[in-house]
Image (cartoon, rainbow, N blue to C red):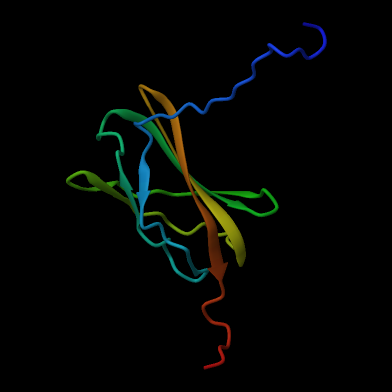
Amino acid sequence: CLDPCADQVQFAFESLDATVPELLAPPSGMAKQQPKLPKITLEKFPAEGTYSSLLVTMVASDKTELACTVQPVDRMGDLTQLDVLTPAALVEGGYSVRISVTDSGGLKTVSIESFVVYDGLAAKVV
């Protein structure tokens, strides 16, 4: 049909990948003076030696991306903890922390949304 007709069907679907790592109790923020981000705990992270790259990127609200250095992965049974160094150019504000891992199944990405970076030395009202 060139024009919409009564027997036209439309549908949408979302492709889900059961092998994408899942965040467990993701951190919500940190002081910019901290040398490392809070530990990031994941389930379903690829086994050691089966992934070719692991990238952690902090994306600011203005879309500026800060690459982070990831220290060796720490495994505890089915759980994996990432130890991530704070990027030198980190400033206060809201970020999305993007964790991307590439294995034989391709690129898999999971994100921590609304991650807040604040000044831990700022005066506080108590």
